[in-house]
Image 1 (spheres, one colour):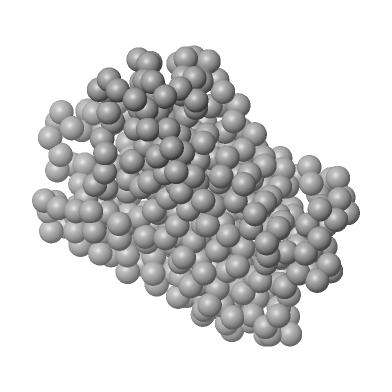
Image 2 (cartoon, rainbow, N blue to C red; image 1 turned 60 degrees about the vertical axis):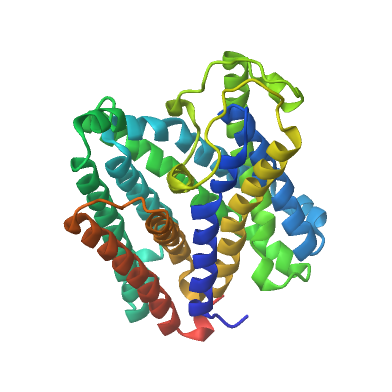
Length: 392
């Protein structure tokens, strides 16, 4: 298949749009705890949608998976488990550093480690990437993306400085830069494990192509395995919250029963999930409903499923984009992270998240968009410079 990096960038933008938007349907879920709606949506995100996508678009899925070496399946699955674990400490990152700084640090680690570790592990960074003009342009694009994430953090911190003291205390409960930096490092690196899972699953891609699947869809069987690992972590955490909060009855109960609210720090989200929640907080929709009355089960399942499938589409388009990037497919992870930030920022602007802020803050937001969009163009251009005969 002939690489088409700029088409790949568009696919990554579509994935970023899905990631930045997926949380909005959850705004219309009523009288369910966070763990109930998250696990319901997650069944669609991590089980139903990946299997449906792979069964519909690839050939001999079960045969491909059965022929895959056990070691490949294990490392791909384990990477998904570790990616899910990144969410266990993401909430603490926000607690100790605040949303803007915490998000920027965690996203920065996720982008850097998820992009650079795979080619370093393969021994290609200094032998195949740095010595080439195309590789240098791609790496420069990666650095520009990291700069854009940093500017986004500055914009958020500028906004926080303009908040009232009461709002600041609510936003940053227990500021501790040292502790927060350590937690953000762990969370960011663990969140990057999704990229490692996609890398570990390369033999699955080769097997599915050998069975006649079009190269555009080669990554879908890998998602089945990686996301099964992510489901494992999220399922165990939500099960723990159900036991702790007494909320397991909500899946079938048409009547609302009082239950303790789930503290925000208990939410299990990785650096690739959280921007969507920030969008949803400012979206018009139904606020938490504590009034007595029946639980709209059908509507809750519908909107949770819609959120879950939308979440899956970020990686559905990711695998399509990666298949088009050519020689430097490792740069797809940076494109994904940049796209998430671009569309989360655009959603924030559309929903007037930045209304009432100073001119300096709004200029930082505009600069964030300019730098992040520029990084995706640079990475696409760098990939286009790579010799076609070297692509795979």
